[in-house]
Length: 402
Image (tube, rainbow, N blue to C red; front, side, top):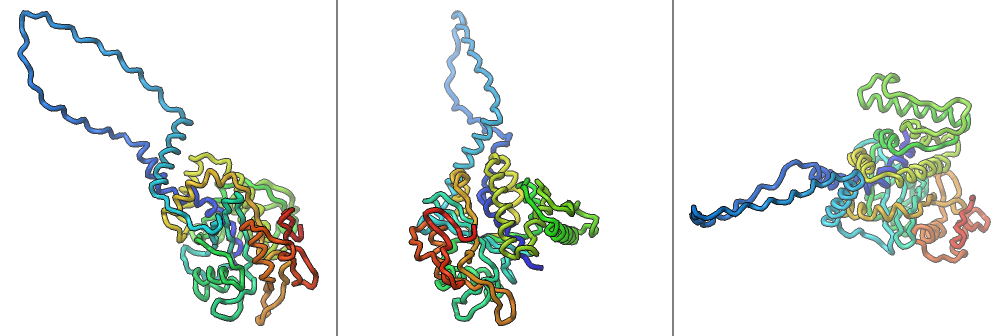
């Protein structure tokens, strides 16, 4: 079964790696906050004592003024104290993040199992944080893009992991004849855990046509059956199913499998339409995350920490968590690459669908968007389709096809 639909899972978990990666530190601090032990008293040194004179009138001992009973901390004050301690813990373990021109790129991958080995990396999104422009970019790398292998030859982008694992995929993305962008880190998640995470990140509002509703409902049923088998539940009588009405419409949904089904749909619109659905849902969930309190983020981290597999160090994770308050205020934008206007669909030697990309223009497109570089319009015009098409205008932010 194709795994392209698990892109959303990776993005959600890694966008929240800020919270997930800091879970161990926060949990350690939280345990300290609730400790009931008290420090042991230190014994005072023995002093010489004189014998009192029986004829002297004893001097009365002064009465000590009682200390006022301290008022208990409010929930707001306790939360602030927790946050201060958390920041202190993170600062002690943080290490510098590798960045280039103020941009940090992490490649998000989806998999059918908890392993770093992928047969085909059908789910790929490059999450880019530009600290200079204060923008977060989510770039869907289309899985059927015809790329050049660093060692020679060509093939689909999602074939790279079957040839050499995640390292081969990253080398292919960074290769100068392809996208030519640095990948600082990567993160991988298991799709079966998506529903639980989506339950915490909803609700989202979506619109589906009658045809889409039919296709989505089939995918909801399929995903629930996989979940039931994985958890030893009776098939079709395990986890509850929530389907869309046959007539379609606009709905606000919170069920993880229903959200998953919507993001899986690719029968209408293909991979381009599916990735657009995923980005649409992700944007809404990101806004939900921005409204979370520190404690809610902790609870979310408790869920997602165990499903994120990454090459990031503990220090890098701590650094991300420290940057979280600022990044929550960054603009977030989504796009795909190759971008419309700079590719055309065709067939390879195996009669499989491919995206033939004008890589020169697509590289300039990424430099203008992710890196915020000044780019003349002439460098963003593609003749790939036989016509001169401006794929992106840096001055207006206009994309081809919008």
